[in-house]
Image (cartoon, rainbow, N blue to C red; front, side):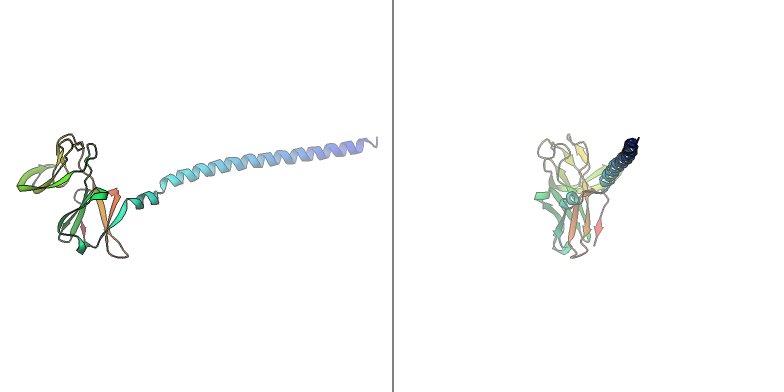
Length: 181
Ligand code: FES
């Protein structure tokens, strides 16, 4: 009979161990669920945060507004035209919307009357693509050739630290965008 005591004691210990193992497993289970929920939540939140490195690679300084010549400046390595009209600045992509060739800014021999989006305008320049003949009005609107869309316009802003013009090719803007300095 005396021998049964340790057995019962042993059984009790075993039940305690079993119960604590079950609690441990339950905790681990809950922990895993929380961890995966956390991971999903983090990924969801991360997808809402802009990729700063990617954006900064598309954002670059051009120079002081006073350093830019009146009219058009072509930034070859960015495939970007910058226009200066007095105190106003805007930028238009040089990348043809057909297959990406570089469009050429072309001065017209004489001003031309055109209708863009139902509005009559006088233009003195256009963009012509040398690859398959697409043509765009001065504001980038496509009107001839296979180009399916207008040229993109990108945001310009002033750097708060040194007053230089910044082009942000990560942000498209409307054709009436002007930065006035
Ligand atoms: S790439 Fe410009 S017309 Fe084809």
